[in-house]
Length: 502
Image (cartoon, rainbow, N blue to C red; front, side):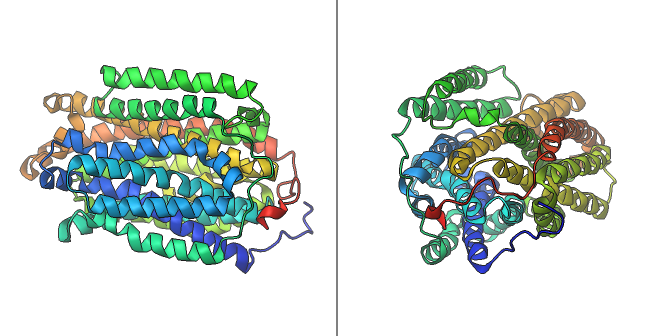
């Protein structure tokens, strides 16, 4: 696009679609974080050990991983609008059933049902909004979607803490009902009618049988790696190895199949491949740090879950502040440049977290997190926008499945790796903590916490250096993305948006 041309603005129709998608995204993302705060309360109320109660969170994550690969095919087969509404109804129904659960087993079963709906809400929403916007406006609408992605992990612990402290744990799930009901009403009224594809093809059952269990086993193995602080347990390495083998088999199958569940041939597009690699590595760094920050406040500084959520708020606010400008800038100069700048700032803003001491004032940490939030807002969604802008509109549904799978796996890897590193560092600094070092440190009595402030601070500092390194690694594919996208016209559409989604 020449400098004299103007990209189309965000008209009312597109903004209302974005508003509907944001409601669904916020609901599903909030739920992944809000439940973690209530695990102790669930353990006490349901009279079950914490290891068993952990399946309330793990079962949901496994359901997400299993259903995400179906996103592209279902959108093509039934239409994105219909699938989105069905997913929200399923999620809300599962939420209500979770709130009414009578024992741990029923709660876990209903959480799986909830996850089957929640897994599609975000990626189907991305399909709807990307197709409605077209390549020329994808950066700006992606910045709108990015707000709940960054605010959800911040507000989840705050809302969860308030509910657990003042109400029954059941409201952790009931709170989704009014949000979901609003989303359904808004979706019925404002989401554009999307016709199914004329040639969606049959469901790739072989691919589904390989990829969905492969992702489920991989996510489960990584979760067990976090719990056991490494791959020493067969419950960690065995499912991880099996999951990776199934994913590798799916890749081979996808290359040979004319209509695979996820077309790995998309990665032959250099811009899409470099964007996907950036999404993966950014997911590792971002979601890993989202594990560390609440633990820093709770374990090293003795704050409650509610206080930890409030202390993380500056990061979400920083991201929300810059996202509108970042979206506009992405559409003007391309996602590659913005992503590279955002990741560079993120490295610079993460280094101070590795230099924190027990005496670092909270106001200074708030300033650091605010700047880091601005970096996050400048890196996350421009990468996704660059990936979509590199594709034909017809490829968006299955590309969305691929990007969400990559992000989910990246998040699981980051959480597992940094949990293992942190546990190892706590055990190194405080040998008496034992194998369950993080849990032991969390349960330190207040009167003893002052004596352990220095070693705990050192353990977190070392782990944050890992976050710095992981973020720096993400810059490498971002450089490739920048060089690839700088050769093309940033906001020029490859082809018109299909009439079925207009």
